[in-house]
Every structure is written in C-alpha cells, then in structure tokens.
Image (cartoon, rainbow, N blue to C red; front, side, top):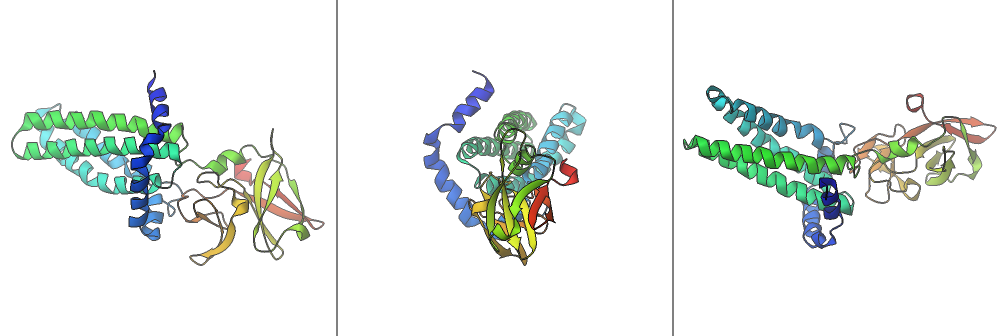
Length: 292
C-alpha cells in the first residue's frame, strides 16, 4: 500500500475520535476568540501556520547540513535551539486550525501533531546531550528528529493538498462560475438584511451564491464558505468588530460585506465577492476582473 493509501486509512479511522474530540474541545476552550483569530491568520489573509513552520523546518534542515562539518557544529546547535523555540508558536497556530477542521483532517492532524511532538522531543534531547558534552548522542538525536519531522511534513502536505486543509473552498467554487454577467432576479424579491440563495451559471453545474440586500445596495458572494464550504445563504448578518459581516452558520467565520475580508475565524482566506450592477430593477453579478 502506498503512503497516501495509509494516510487515507488514518483519515477514515473513527476509533481515533475518542481521543481527538476531548483534545479538540480543550483547544477551543483554552484559546479566546481574538487569540484564535490571530493564530488562524485572519489578519494575514491566509493561514499563518505554513508561514510559521518555515522557521523550525528551515533551521533544523540547516543544522543537519552544518552538523556534517565538525567546525560548524556550534552554529548547528544554535540553529536547533532556534527551531525548538519557533516550534511553539507554529504548534499553537496548527492546533487552532486543527480544532476547526473536518473530521478526516482532524484524524490526520492528530498523527501530524504526535510526530511533531516526537521530533521536538528529540531535538530538545539533542540540545541537552550537546550541552553535557555528549556530542555523538546529540548528533544521533538531531538526525532522528529531522527524520521524524520530515515524515510529519509529508502528513501535513497530504492534509493541505489532498484534503484541502487551509485552502479557500470559495475560490474553487468560483472557478466553475460563468465569466459573464448573470441575472439574479429582481431586487424587490430579495429580503432586507439577511442572506438569500441565488444560483450562478456555471460551466457544467449551477453555483450557489449568497446575496445580501441592504436597502438599494446588494452584495453577492460565492455561496460556499472559504473555510469548509459552509452554506453562507443559511447564515446571518452581524456586526463584527464594527463591520457588517456575513456569518457562516457552520463555524462562525465572519466576512466583511463590503470587501469579503475575513473579520473572524476560523476562515483566514477572504470570501469570493462578485461585482454587482442593476439593470431595470434586476440584480446582475459577475466575477471581478482578477478572477476572469
């Protein structure tokens, strides 16, 4: 069986949920919403975890190269210590994202976290051995840590690319939309101040859209939430941090009605918003120029 097949089996292993669900609830309870938003990367516009992991990964790989040449091993030790310190915020951001993912991603994420914890423990052990003058043991532990971290990175890659963890599901849905102006019906048929479902013409299937009317103004979004494809037309309009936002009914992600920017996580990616114009009292919408 291939590695991908093994990882898919882990993602289907429901027995893991007995351990994962309490850990997930503990993470969600421990992190206040502003902290979770910061760790999700709502301020950045995409998940912050991939950015943070560059530091421990980069320092540990570099340390592995420097350790091959004895005169550079002191520098390698400094890099290992830097990676150990940087692993803390990287782990926190990963835990925040993991707690809001769907069940298959959470199961693989538990394996990813366990491997990263093991790698971190090996590197801490390497630092201790080096400090005590046991250089050979320090080398063995650090290379073992690099091997475990590399395997964990493969798991993380599967979560990102095969399971779309952290990807914008709204962008994927937007690719199916027609590039032309679409007639979404009369303005008078739209309810005031709450989202309504309309469909946009797609290349092969109709694409759900979430439409919000505020007086004479209409905002139109791709209907699949960028986080996990939640149905935004079933959400509601709320004031979030002083901004009128469309809130996803699944996980509470809030998107600015004016810009589509994420104002509250777990979504870090913004929501795809369409251009709107009125023609004889009817709402017309199309993808913005950057998406066409």
